[in-house]
Length: 74
Image (cartoon, rainbow, N blue to C red; front, side, top):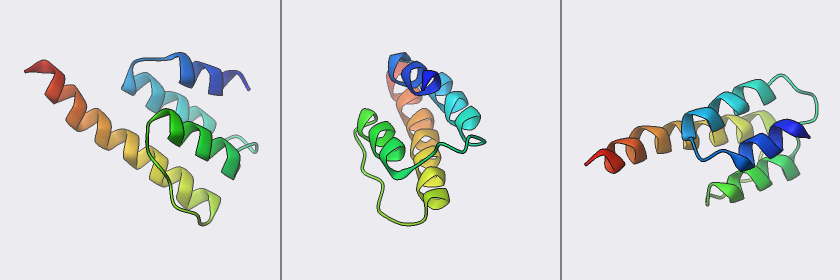
């Protein structure tokens, strides 16, 4: 899955988020994919419906974008 590799290769949180947005329309999203993407961000997404898990992953990434980008600018 090329988008997943792009996600892993990127160091930019905003780029990672845009890749997630692109992945959202794919039929191949499953628990294994969400777990791998979450692990690459050093987070754990609780079990549940795949759409809620994916939304939580996006939320975690948005939160990281908000707080880690300001922290690095100081």
